[in-house]
Length: 399
Image (cartoon, rainbow, N blue to C red; front, side, top):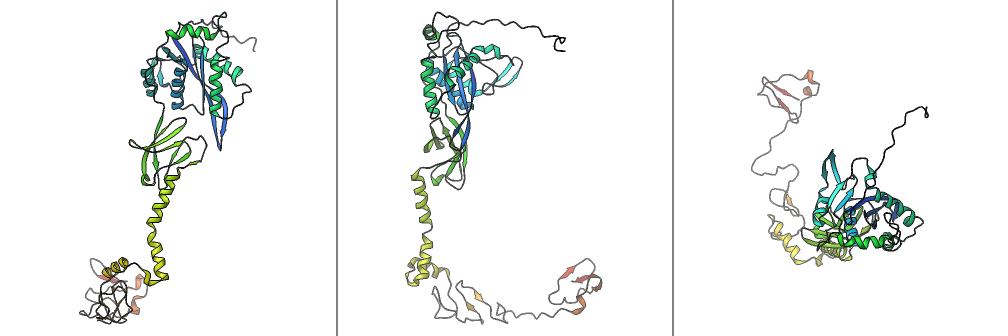
């Protein structure tokens, strides 16, 4: 069947050529995973290659988020010391959010970057990776010539080695379009035709809003960073770069931390915790005074005794009037006054001395049965004591 099945016609490709300074191609490359403490993060390489000279820039990041995508552009433009006029992408989400034929909706942050550096973002056709074959071939060259059997301590060491390799062995290779010259020589010819850098680089900080709970920690990227205890239960802003994490309340900077890519770590500033401990000790000082009073009643502060005397009204006994604490004394009406100043009702007496208590008759044995045994009594009859009366439209029923 394989010999009889009709084969598709072979497709021919046209070799594209670009002018000096006209175009650069951009793509991500995945190089496995990197363990940082207890976290396992993907190791991604940002590759930008100039289409004319094949001079490339390589930077590694722990992810392919939008802020890393922008950082890769800014560092590549700084390494080239210039900007190409057109940047070619495939349809990744960091560049193209939506596409329908020739109608393309770009990522708004990418458009801001393009307006700042004055280049044109241009995506290739869908499922046509051959249209950016220069960066695809450059990624294969990076895998074979740089990353194979490469040892490094951390991400900073890997990026330092990548920068040295791009300016050294990678720039000294022969140019694929002109085998008589090296990439370094062709790039020196192309550099004057590239666009100049703007005065200020594009901001690459990642900005997010975080909610701080009861504890003075702001969670960002799976880690907790301390904030002053006066800013708990608030929504704060986090500005993060590859090295630092700044926590802001509006425009006021509350804390500056060194960023970590670990997971579940607590990055603390000692002054924040010391201020919280001092605040807690001052708020709980009254507990120590209460324990001191129970140990030595005469050592209670005078202002607390005066406050207690104002709060406790005097009783009818002349010896106890105006005192903060007194033993149980009999007062008018057969009751006594406790520390709260309320009248305690004596057994067999009501709280009011002017209105006599109404005698409450005992419940009748006739009403202890079920619902069928309840008689329909007249409304004028009194309900026995302890029996709830149900009001109806026609008669009164006792339960």
